Amino acid sequence: MGNRVGIMGGTFNPIHYGHLRLALTAQEQILLDKVLFMPSGTSYMKSNVLETQKRVDMVALAIEEYPQFELSFIEAQKAGNTYTFETLQDLKKSDPDTQYFFIIGADSLFQLEQWRCPELIFELTTLVCAVRDDYTIDSIRQKGDVLSKLGADIVYLNSPKWDISSTEIRARVRQGMPIHDWVPPKVVYYIEQEHLYEED
Image (cartoon, rainbow, N blue to C red; front, top):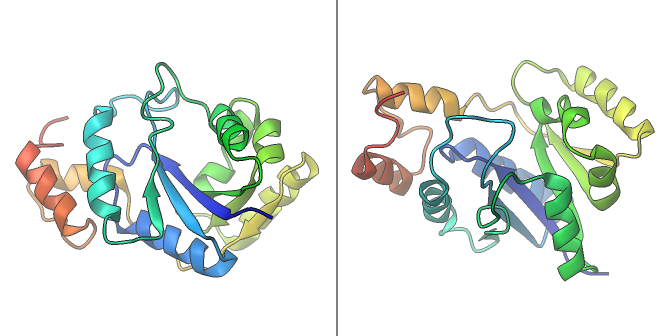
């Protein structure tokens, strides 16, 4: 059997400690060989997202001290909208023996049926779900049971809730408030040097 590889996708606008802790927890609990951090290119689900290269730069800075984490450009370099099912198809095509684990927060689990071709996502990867936001583990498992009947294979992480959001970090920057407790130092410096998020 091939490697066990986790996928952390998202806009990472900006990346923060919550993302890193989630990836570390997944790696430890389900024995992943590595985790791919995959910044999105053009998101069809979000607007007003910072330009791709700056988000890629921040991810690179955040993960450089973690040899088990790897930056993936597969979505960032794609023209037009990026869809998870297409990304997974591309990964499986290039490395068919690898087992992929798609790491998500509970908020994404509740949105998955609205994503493009969710049945293909379920076919190509194992979902790894963490508690997040206002969802209880019971409500997450109930939703998971619904998705399992549609073909999803779901692993639930035993992890504490992390109350960090990129939205709140951007708001703090606009207000001139510190973000050092939420964002790695090199990313904080990059945000300051590039004057990111200072305006809406």
